[in-house]
Picture (cartoon, rainbow, N blue to C red):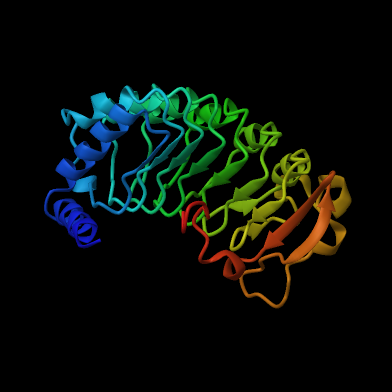
Length: 272
């Protein structure tokens, strides 16, 4: 038992003193064992990652990998070589990049994400993303297996009609978190949500609700797919957040306010 404790301590010391070396060891071990999961979270790799880092090449060869966790690493930008490696992970089903500092994802990054045909869990929450470009919505729209999408706690200021349309086609989506952004909920948004017949968890939180639908003028809630009892903001919350359980289309949605989901960041494997 003493030996095991000492080995764990040595590994922890390496992770603290040389995160890149630790990450490289984990990658080499994953390649040697044909691992399906790889956790490289909480290593503060962001300031150290460069395009010429040898770990990217190994990562791209992990053809059995299904679960990749790069969260909480202070990553501001993933180099081109990194996105290229991620895009080669054909069997990846779970990708966690939450709680980093990526204010934007490059076009190459979105293209690589769009190549992940088996991706079912994508967590980009807590990054400060300011927008998702057209190439990003196109990529998300190709993720036909996606059932968990976490975009909360960013700075996304606009979700275009095309974006809502792409989301509305993700028919396997069961959990969608958009709270704590700068979005305004519009008619097309409710219509898209009404098409998500497998949706079980929806967090809108502090998103402002455009209940008059601006250009379209005032319309009855049911005509836009909005549950009648949620037609007006909940007066109990200064943010106007909705808090009700109603049928939208054929989906039973839990429309939660920001407070009810403030500690949520993805939920899988102990705090994702």
